[in-house]
Length: 399
Image (cartoon, rainbow, N blue to C red; front, top):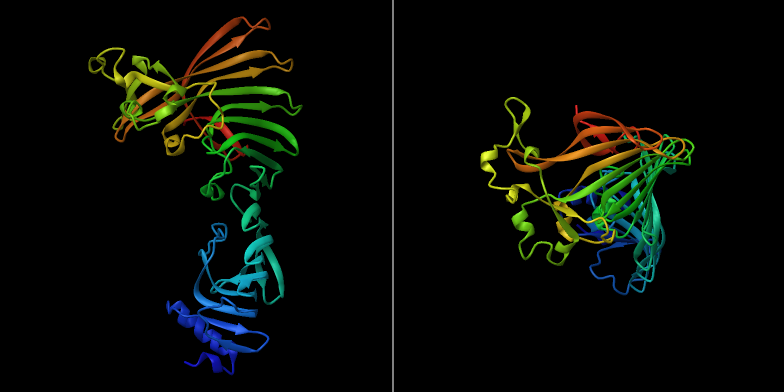
């Protein structure tokens, strides 16, 4: 096939696209000034406008928001002395989505946009993402979502400020302050979670009023403050962070190394060691005869201390940490505590090993002078999760 002597460029390019779909590995340049097509494997010193069509043009753009592959088939722009210069446009097979980015001396510099272009209307009909590069480094990104079930509309990240802002259709806004950013954090399932790695603080606003504040330690939730419509404190949840793995592994030389001193020792009450009976769907006490003493390793707990540096990085070991509610305080309009919820933890043995679960054990009610007046036994299992109604993290009752 003589690509260089094509008389009908569009017709031949259509043929090439069909070939590329069959994974044939070659590409073509189109020189706009010379109105000529040519093969070129080395564009080191090439200067001029061109189109490059290839079955796989790799890119570092993230396309999880658009359900597209991570490579392109068409690149068009201007080369100056073998380096990209000015605006470049990238396209996919069988898609009207385009990536547009600015280059300076071969490096990404300035604004970029990912959008859907309508050939019929000859205009951009939807923007998916826009942001900015400085010296080939992405410094900011704003992603736009359409018809998500969780009502998320806009996600903006400022990588220099370590700040992320999420905006929802109902007027809710979540602002997250980070102490580090990892690549996988750009791709997420929930707007915020109780173990949002790399996070320091999170603020929830509704119609520009502060509704909640969340504080994290080692990227794991430690406290949530909830506010009423007058932006006075309504309640506060407190959490403990536990090591959720084999204690023998914790004590080994390679695990946590110099971070062991950040944990304090505690013991689980014997009655809070449970077995889940799948047949009868209930929790039963672990047989006391299988517990050697109060020093039995099954009863040992490792709890992260409260005074550790909140931006400490546990690396891959942070997957071994779990948070559980400790207690909740409720405040009246004068800022005095009138009620407290107290939680306990249970270590549950099941088919897959062991896991920690949380139980709302009791609620205490107080007079104005903070004397205890009533204790109500509750004993209901709870869990912490993203609440789709409030768009934030919340302690929820299990059904």
